[in-house]
Length: 119
Image (tube, helix red, strand yellow):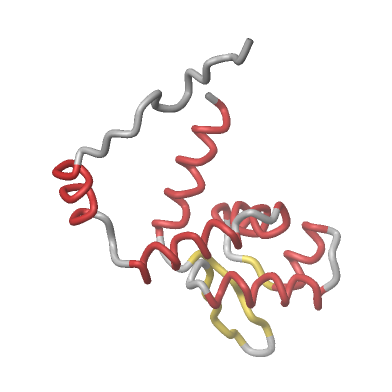
């Protein structure tokens, strides 16, 4: 005997008004794509570790390499990806490049995600 699926509708019935109202409130496609790209980049444990370290303090590339056990070249590549999405920024001081989070929203995003993970 075929088992009934309980996690999908048993009939097809679209509430056109509700769909139209929700569709009006959704962000533009470019914003949705940018958000998806942010989550995609944060889908890598090394990049999450880098962001979490930068939540605690501003660090140079060498510090991050030592912290993660990766090469300076590998960390630079990861930082470039994070920088391209405006998740981190850097400042130069002499020959050193110090990284920090681009703004407080990134920290909030990570904190909320960690709360979700711990629930």
